[in-house]
Length: 158
Image (cartoon, rainbow, N blue to C red; front, side, top):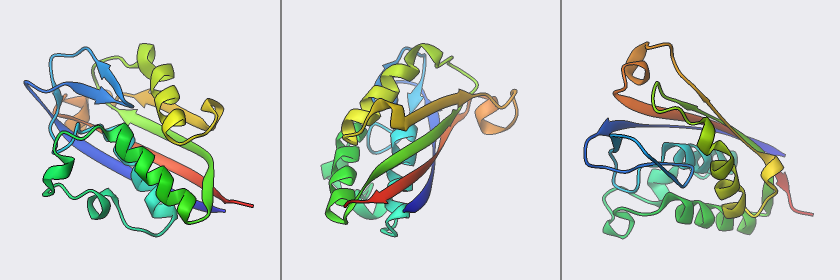
């Protein structure tokens, strides 16, 4: 077994869609980034790549590569899943936390879990997505950005 941790953060800006866990969330701002800036999926990818000791998503999907401009992060997660399989591993489970003051994410969490599970070819029961605020503290609390953490357990294929 191998464990990995991922973390990502993006700034909230006007005139962008807010995509989290592959779900478009109705909100007045979205996340700034080269791709769709899905911080949750980016943290998930980094946790898996970290568990495999293969660096981070920037090494695999560089932000100066036009092929990834406005990329759908769920599609990139499917590629990371392929890398994981090629290396002889499968997902045991993943636990994630999204940190943002707004918007409220509870109505969207089950769809996020489902999207991530489908991309990773696993049961939705192996994917945890939680959301929390920081009680108006820091850049997430002041609504300047959103961050996410992910921890995964990979199991060797038998």
